[in-house]
Image (tube, rainbow, N blue to C red; front, side):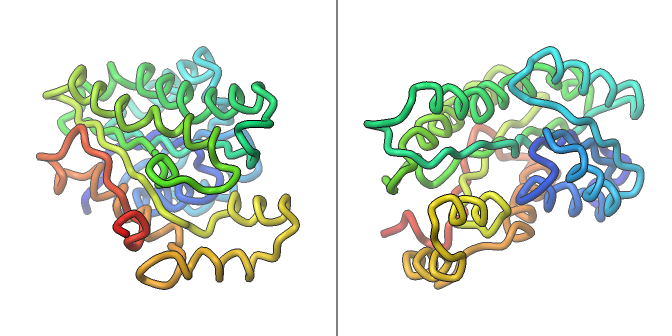
Length: 249
């Protein structure tokens, strides 16, 4: 199994892509540490991951992240993999938004990613296959209504990933996933906030991609786990777009 005896720290682990990554990593022999802000959600995912450790954590709080990483090393003695999946999306027009809405997204999506990378770096350097996968978004490259502030916060991820790869290489690889439309709890919540039905929303999204449908979280998790594994041992500093051709046209 690809991740036998390896340890993953996974943020945003209570739902969506983060939960799917944790489940796949555990199914391939790894041990997982689940970080997120909703304890009940973390516990539900932990039930599917033998030996998992759930640590409620706000990734925008650097001290809390350090405590979570310290607890991981204390419990398991190592960290081999990090997936930064924690994200916040507040749908609003940039031109009329409250600046605090940008700060709130930036603190989770950008600063939170940096906090986890910084805290985990010493342990990752001791791993024979230290690897980080961050999460960007296709809206960094294409404009979509009410996504400007989210896109700006996620736009930090590709250059941050490249520079972390430079700083942590050659012992630790750092890559990023840029996912297209994926059916997650966050997607469902967004349509509810906007007063749209999920069915109508998914139909609209599906019409904009070559494969004619949105992704499911396990499809993104398989790409993340590839990047974390030794199969991607010659990949670092890259942002991999997985969007059913959305940005190809």
